[in-house]
Length: 334
Image 1 (spheres, rainbow, N blue to C red):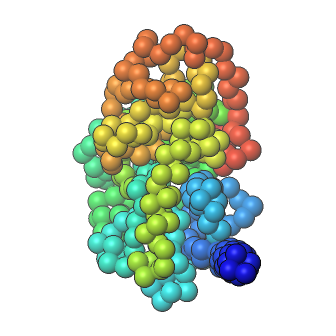
Image 2 (image 1 turned 135 degrees about the vertical axis):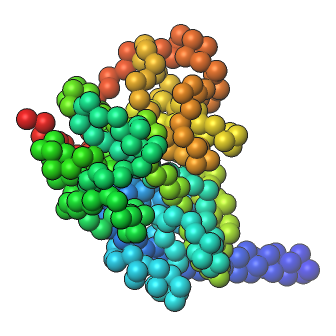
């Protein structure tokens, strides 16, 4: 009799456990993480427009079974909504002291690197180092970095509606130089490399560097666990080629072992027959890209191209135009 009672009790407890898990799972499905961002192409934008930062964050969260609901609206409304608990956080934020008071930040998963672009013959590296006194600078209306120039008196700011328009003003001598995110430069080099090298010069040093973070409210239940899992998943995505696919690039530079120095990471295990001409710096402790970097291929570190085993050095079919996921721009150089 006792065995029967014990068996019935075990079945009852198992039923309660399964019901509890079902309710928990159901609740998770009905309560996606509410994230908000402003319209900031190519990083954040409304669907179906490509938004690489949003795509990276949503994919990392999907992999750890966290559903998301994204709202795109004015930046001031984004921050007000987060502070008043209308939103749980944001997929793409710069870190400030004020925001750290109420937000938990992930490790930086990208960094906005603004480089100066001028016409061939200009010394934009000198301008990036010494300032832009008595020069005209092309900016895109509405971009967050514009705030860095609000109180600059000796620079003439010329605003455009898009990066494409900004490039055309530069080519038409309507501005001395323009400020462009390095990610867009990578897309342009991939799609129109010959024209870029013939007509433009790009500063080797970044004019502005802003690490980009995923952030959640500190008072959100489970926020710390989500951030911790997100950090781990992002590194996996860089290693398995997901980062490259979502960014639409073949080579990335990212600090894989947290030593503050970036490694060059290819899209796959077959990396080509010659070293890459360029790579996009995802993030490396806010530092400029070193002139010499290690490689991270097939889960192993190599000090130089020559150290990489020959089995990885095969011909790669590299597309000369942006991928479907690549929000690249196209400039008319004629």
